[in-house]
Amino acid sequence: MFHPYTTPRQPPVFNQRPPGPRFLNYKNRGLEGANSFPALNKKPLSPYKWIRPPPIAAFVPPHMPRMSSGHKRQMNEYNNPPAVKHQRLDFSPDPSLAPPAIWRPRFPDPAVRQPPRPSLVGSHQVPSSPNFSHHPQGLSVTRRVFNIHLYANDTLSGQMVEMFEACQQQPSDLEHKEMIRANLLQEIKKCYKGARLYLTGSSMNGLACRTSDADLCLVVEQQKRSTILRVLSRLRDVFKNLPYISTTDLIKAKVPILRFREKDSNVEFDLNINNTVGIRNTFLLKSYAHADARVKPLILVVKKWARHHKINDASKGTLSSYTLVLMVLHYLQILNEPVLPSLQRDHPDCFDPLMEIDSVPESSSYVPSYSSRNESSLGELFLGFLRYYSTQFRWSELVISVREATTFLKSKSWGNKFICVEEPFDGKNVARAVYEKAKFKAIKAQFAESYRNLFAKMDLNSVLPVRAIIEHESQKR
Picture 1 (cartoon, rainbow, N blue to C red):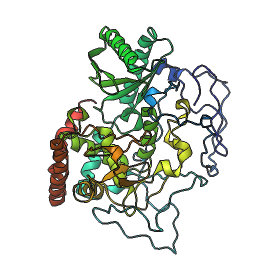
Picture 2 (picture 1 turned 45 degrees about the vertical axis):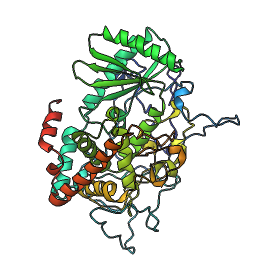
Picture 3 (picture 1 turned 30 degrees about the vertical axis):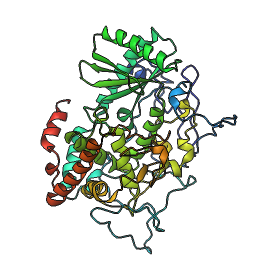
Picture 4 (picture 1 turned 45 degrees about the horizontal axis):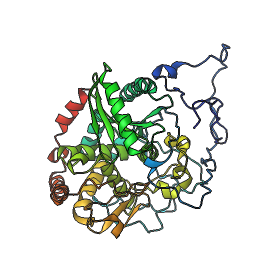
């Protein structure tokens, strides 16, 4: 990370890495900045000869000094002084798009018998066997590359892969959102010279569909809620006069947002001010999304399932997409053979909640890789997800914690909320929108009904109109 007004500092050394800049520096000028590279020389290149690189050392982030004051920083970053972070796009390779390969355990040992394949729906017990181990910070970082089709050896899994490949956000979609962000920033700077505007959420963490909304975080000096509302009101007037923006709406929620649409793509944008915790959890979810090839397809299908059954709209008292993502990650963490670890627990320096915003990485390659021994197919994981929340999870007693890869008992501080899912950085309940008993019962009933239907037919069409969804997403191409 580097300050936009200074020369980019060199990235940490990973043993021997070819010299040169690693990041694209847009300097908030739009996409054209990505193609402005000065030619260093015009000498012909020497013949290329591939040499096997040495093992890559694990990344150890630079020491971040903690606050010297005896008082703890307030966990609500909404009230903290804004920090400047430079926006850039990350097109790091997606493990699910790699060429076909034969999957093997990360450290195969012929003398050790591999664990048996997990049952169809897994188990919700917290891992405690000696087979479970996370990778310490000191181990070398080796990226496990495999193809998602290796986990699609049955009809249900194949349908999930087909939906994922048809619906996932494309690089062109992200570039278009970045272009809108850059254009909006130029207009905002006419009113607030020191403003910074960043894409966050699913657009940046790799969990978006082609029709997904886009989240924007505007960092300005204003901190009081009344002042922030005035800023959003002023920006609403500015955006109304822009030819490429339509249907602006100021929503005075606990975290106020300005909602608007871009005319050409009809993509909906939600703009908040100084809610920088979104930058932290964007990096966290991106790291989870790249930890295993099954994460992205499973989350996409779960979100499509919840949207189809009308339990994925926080504004109407049901589950937000962020809550659903954390629920999926939690399930993948607590299987007898976990698909995912707790990244925050295993690599605390990478996800320090007190790290300055301009030091938060945006590439998942900063996090040492994790190799799961769980070989469950996508269909098995989806069915297990539905079963876990319909027959095993104790809603009235437990709080979901992705931060600790477990659950803990509700305390009085959680109030009487029906669903409790801990935000990994500020500890708040991201499922607080579910406050009506009728909505809570509808959510639980839908989990149970979908589990029964899917278990009986093992066909994704039994819980989702697969072809209609694919055709709807394909219209964006």
